[in-house]
Image 1 (cartoon, rainbow, N blue to C red):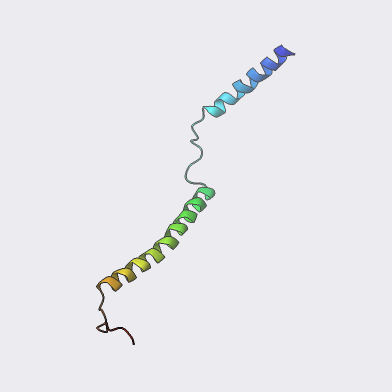
Image 2: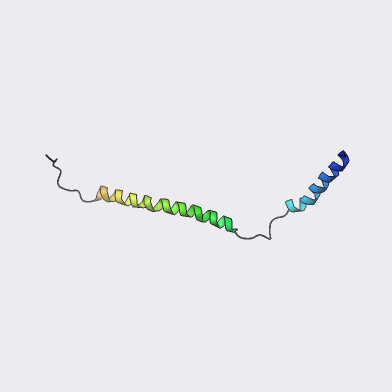
Length: 75
């Protein structure tokens, strides 16, 4: 029993060694999941960038924009 188990394991390892040694030359380019993954994170970056730019531009406008001359408090 022990001898047959060892020979089975040796045969499995020996038959899998060409698959482990392959360089993957037959697959080229990106898969569809990779493209979707990159597009998803691109979408997240774009949706965070636009409101950030809007906030930055309005902040700069408020710092360097015209100030009102009415500085008197209401009574």
